[in-house]
Amino acid sequence: MKPCWPALALLALALLPAAVTAAVTVVDDEGTTVTLPRPAARIVSLAPHLTEQLFAIGAGDRIVATSEFADFPPAALEIPRVARAHGVDLERIAALQPDLVAIWGSGFAAATVASIRRLGIPVFVSEPHSLDDVANSLRRLGILAGTDGEPAAAAFEAKIAALRARYAGKPKVRVFYQVWAAPLMTLGGRHVISEAIALCGGRNVFAGLTPIAPQVSIEAVLAADPQAIVTAEPGARPTSALAIWQQFPNLSATKHHHFYTLDADRMNRHGPRLADEVAVLCAVLDQTRSSAAK
Image (cartoon, rainbow, N blue to C red; front, side, top):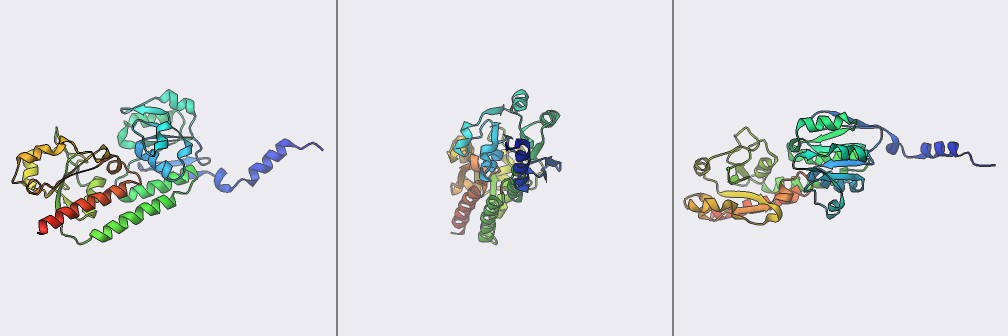
């Protein structure tokens, strides 16, 4: 008897694990419900931190396109680019026929997100506002990709919890986090890095400002008299960005040369490596703290 191929195909589908064929639903960082008829096999990742997160949960091989500067892990460098300088190639995205587009909310205009949705492609908007949001993003992407995001999320949370316990109750260190030198910009209290500073026993001297990345004056920094001035550059390579403060010898940070450059690729991206760079931040603030105690 010849095999009945349609019947065999139906039998094979019936034997697939339910998790592979069942619909999956999460709520993204905009509060939008994202539902896929089945876990995504083809994903467009429009942010370096989202690409890093997808690799961390074992879904790197599902990424069919990504954005400029998505360079970690090294395998990400082999993925085609469909977004550069806040612009997206909608035609290429449509041609790739992805099951899901994961996009950084702050990285693109709302009109861009709307344009992708008009293509009929489900969109997951990522906009982490806290350290907890990073772990939650790993879990939700795991659901959407049909992989297990829990191990990566739990590992991130464990590192953060250990740092929080280690530096709880330490004397506060006044910190100025410099985002940009000209114009002079910092981070307000609603930014994830401000939360990291507090976790390390620091106090962001501009935590009271409402904007996420406010512009401040030199006079305001001098009045706040930070004990440590921190910035971030790719690969933690020091630049002349903090040189401006050398002309103010009475500034507490200048007196003791408490200028620190973190790795921007780890600190400014909301990926799993953020926890490791928060540990570096905690260490340099503890160094400042020890110096002040002498």
